[in-house]
Length: 64
Image (tube, helix red, strand yellow):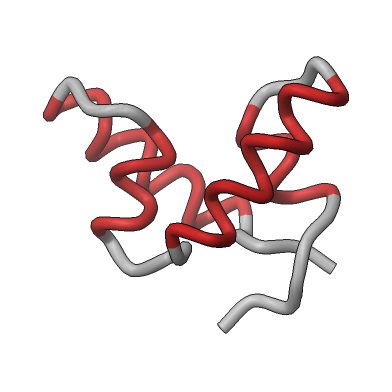
């Protein structure tokens, strides 16, 4: 299962670039992730040496 879909990731990317904020923080601000989900995804990212977006799509809890 995944935490975020590709369309949601694309929306966050567009918004985040215009506002010069971090991807994860913007995803939480937009209501796509909780702080806990972000923390888990960041841990997966660090342990797997992958981009955060990959960690959100490849693994995770069911999307709300």
